Image (cartoon, one colour):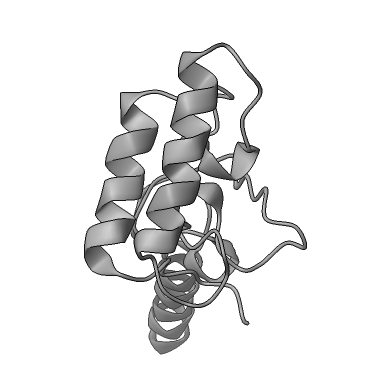
Length: 123
């Protein structure tokens, strides 16, 4: 009986360790490039790639802050999209390859936080 209890405890620990997915997108936290925003596609259009997915990366100039300079980049993307022109895919926060109010809301969240992420990937 004691062996069965130990085996069951081990199974529960293994299940809980493998089920850590705080945003519910199906990507386990240690592999998730946006821990708090669901992004099952894990799109990362940064060149070269960084540890943050588009969904939580408003730091377009890669200085570690989401600030006025990044807002100007997003504004440029928005202007291009409104006029039917190609835009930088880094501005497509929801990964649907269009620029709309959902992308703006995701960027606004990053802007108000002042930093990208968080990410579960090692830097």
